[in-house]
Amino acid sequence: MSGSRKELWRRSESPTEVWDDTDKEWEFEIVGEELDEDGKTSRYEVRWLNWHRSDGTNVTWPGQKDPIPVRAIKAWKQEQATRIQKILKDSPSSLAIKVPTTLDGHLMETDLRSQGYQQKLAIRRMEPSQAPNKLVEHMHGLLSKKVHPITQQPRQSRLQASQARTSTSQTSTSQARSSTASSKAGPSKQPASQERRLKLEKEWTAIADTSHAAPIAIVNIIDDEDGPPLPPNFRYVEQGYIYHKDVEEIDLDAVMVGCDCYECDHEGASACDCQAPSRLHNRNDKIFAYTPDGLFNFQVASGIEVIECNKKCECNPDCVNRVAQRPRKFVIEVFKTSLAGWGVRSQSNIKRGQVVGVYSGQLITRKQAEEMPLKHRGYCFDLDGYEDPDGNASDSDRQFTVDSRQHGNWTRFINHSCSPNMVVYSVVYDTIPEFGNPYLAFAALRDIPNLTELTFDYDPSEGDRAKKGKDKMPPGARKCHCGTEGCRGWVPV
Ligand SMILES: C[S@@+](CC[C@H](N)C(=O)[O-])C[C@H]1O[C@@H](n2cnc3c(N)ncnc32)[C@H](O)[C@@H]1O
Image (cartoon, rainbow, N blue to C red; front, side):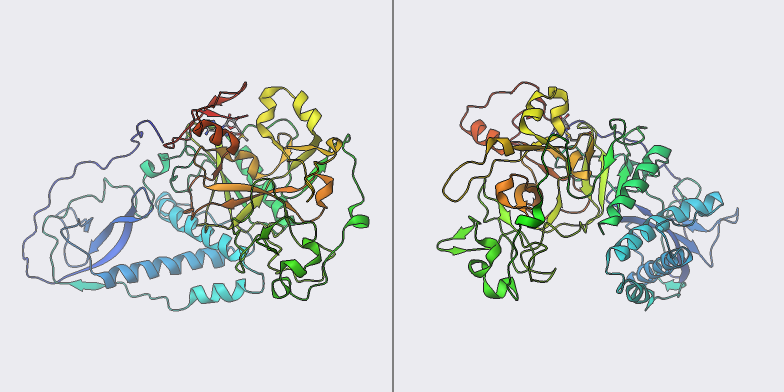
């Protein structure tokens, strides 16, 4: 990200506190913590049990010179975990978490509530049968021990209790951190309580849920915009295409065939009937596009379609050749970036090769897309024409574009990067390759830490041209803010 970071919050200077009786054993309890901009604890708030100031206060924020014993920290963390579990238990049936009423309580509980929410999301993403057990697992082994004697005295602790932000709340500087394409973004805890944003979040999550996909969060820690701008009557579509009335729908059931493999990876791709039209080879053998662990294997050359098993196949839903078709498992945040409008990131770490999701939208003809005003083309994705194994191009009447301006899912917010962390490939699973309506799946090109913006290259062939010094900014292109070293300077349309 270029530009300087705005400072929204800074600790006040505090008077130095002088302590005596350095050999005395001081009992204390941790009562709070302050998080840094990466969400890690930067220091703890400590209440002293056999010491107080003349005004009766007895809380300090020991610095690095006065390290707090590990066992005390461990017990504090476990105590926090217990509190989170209580919050979860008190609101078991939905993702909503109870809001406490007093101000102190509110600040203290906000972070716990946020952590509880994350855990709930994680639990909810599990198979329903596992979730209750997992909750029970979380409950085990929690400690309530609170008081810890330490012999080391915090000589120069600082008086911070009245100046520091309430314990366990996130610093605002961390919230101000955002990203442009490909940078690591700040934590996702901003309570930007705009009604529209929450309404969209709820609506999209409910629609995603009908496909058993993970929730969608909408996060803005940059400004007051109450969610991404959308055309009137925008419809969230988690999976599949909405056919434009000018696009003929074909009775796919009548033409699709399935394989009769017992286990596709056992018999191998060459033996799988689904792979008959596939051009995915390794020397003379056909191969699947995925590793046995369900990761994209990057053996798919540009222009080659992946053909997954389909509903007519005999194999199980966990077949090695059914990956892009599975419900999305990562919780996605559509978030406001500082320079490139709204973007997308995941709340979980993503492994190289994991398939994150699939583009959705309205299927229109290529001609319709070409006639569209340039300003609307930013949400269009051309489906490359199918070439059969003999190299014959597809029927030009069946060349399509997916337009996600009016109908689409979270992938319509993925920004471009000249050095992206995802790659797009074409995949067929509820159609046949000859029909020219494959899906576009996004696979992670490298391990992507959670809350890092997800990006892809809007036109990788531009990259090749740029390397050869033949790049030319096309009409309608915009200045690129991906901020990567090899940035070409503009975003292709
Ligand atoms: C498919 S949309 C992506 C979502 C978009 N940022 C939004 O707020 O709706 C594509 C548009 O996002 C913007 N965009 C995407 N990547 C960008 C980048 N690296 N730098 C600047 N703008 C970008 C451009 O305006 C582009 O036309």
